[in-house]
Image 1 (cartoon, helix red, strand yellow):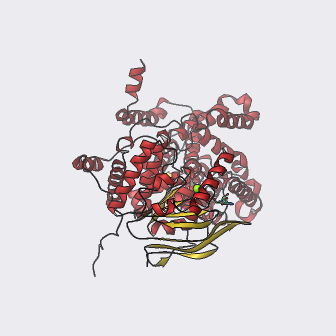
Image 2: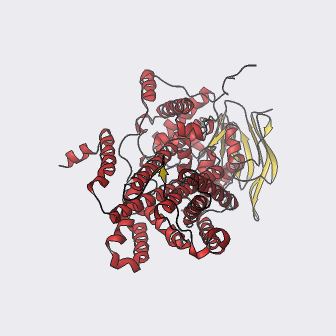
Image 3: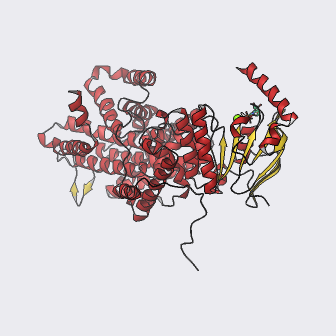
Length: 259
Length: 350
Ligand SMILES: Nc1ncnc2c1ncn2[C@@H]1O[C@H](COP(=O)(O)OP(=O)(O)O)[C@@H](O)[C@H]1O
Ligand SMILES: [Mg+2]
């Protein structure tokens, strides 16, 4: 059985089939990518994986246990954490505080510990703060810990979201278009960082609409169009798949109309 | 010049400023202030407590309550009734007032769990009116519109605290100090961070594993308990209460202080209370238009300075404890490889 297995999940909004019987799986320590044009249903898949939406049909198993139709808190405590396509940081908090919020889940002191400033409280606060700084250093934000989150550049904010997700003790990271809005150099750096995460043992699912971004990093690619999975396989196979090329040409046209 | 100013505001001097302000507050009554002035200062203290409490809910957690006078009333009535009928000591009566305010806020919070934003505000507004109606109409217990009279003064170790002997003033300072300390401890912990995260982005907070509903209820209860304590102190200070003290206007006044001072700050609560309580006294001729003025302040603040008068961001670095600084220094700049969490080693084997 795979580490994380998504079996034929579906979601509709009124008459729109946003996600239609999509399946995929990922083994521990892999990077897979879900690609497809805007509006294909990629973010909806993440929302189903993380408990934002219930699923209409299908099953999601993580480490052999079903995790669909759980609350976001239950999903994150099982070890799956995510970032957002539209950055959702705690913008009036400092960089380090954002990451400290991420450590909330593994901070087990009581209200009384807070009021009495017990050893337990101090131990957790100290350890979590060190952990937060370590994560920030390794992601390249070590010199920004005191700054407020919204004073960071766009690229740095995306990194901070990843840092915050890591702080929840995640084993699986779901990254929704992490390179969006970055220049090619930033985006290359980010992908390099994602590789080191994978080498450290993290399991990563990337969402991307630009196929070229994830070509070199993915163990496997799944292509979604109009809610349906239209292709899967190694990056090379997918890139040369006629259905994918057709979807992407259609997709590009949609872009043009949108913008 | 500007250099000197910014030098003076450095964080290492904050302790001295705070100490100076506290010392001034302690020695102020010894200047022989009139009872009138002393009473205004005590009212400022009470409203600072109320604002402190509401700030936990509205300023930090982002849940707007328009009915907080209800908890102020519950604290005042429970404490006053217990003290007049059972001759309970002030501190015990106050504790009872706080507990009842907390329980009633728990009931309100649990029944409005699913409400957010404007709907929640309207529910709290309704709750405030219900409590006032109960106070007005449950005559056998609350004495209805006549209110509760002859509430005993607080006494401490057999020593009666009055305005004349400054005892009430110092009791106010002590209570305000305790409430400020409690709020400080709560805010600087995972609880406070959870509150702020909920205000900033509730969905993202859920993805951090924060049980947002539970924390919102907690913020409600903390906030109401503080209002209950302030109510109890008010009742024993003023010695006569009736339902007219605890109207919608009072709830709005509390909210105005929080917004004027700066939501999510401590300094803002003291300064906001001082301004909004002292001004109407100074401008008596405006008394009839008080609420026009409050309304105007709210609108103008929302338009031009939504963060409040004192709601600036600290430009000081985040405070790392000594322990943390040492741990980080030891680590130096060594390369860190992030590894996924594999579960803690069992602490207790067996
Ligand atoms: N909460 C929702 N209510 C209604 N329609 C939605 C909702 N969320 C997503 N959709 C629709 O589902 C489709 C897929 O959206 P999404 O998953 O965001 O696409 P992608 O992330 O691939 O760009 C879009 O047509 C979108 O409008
Ligand atoms: Mg999307």
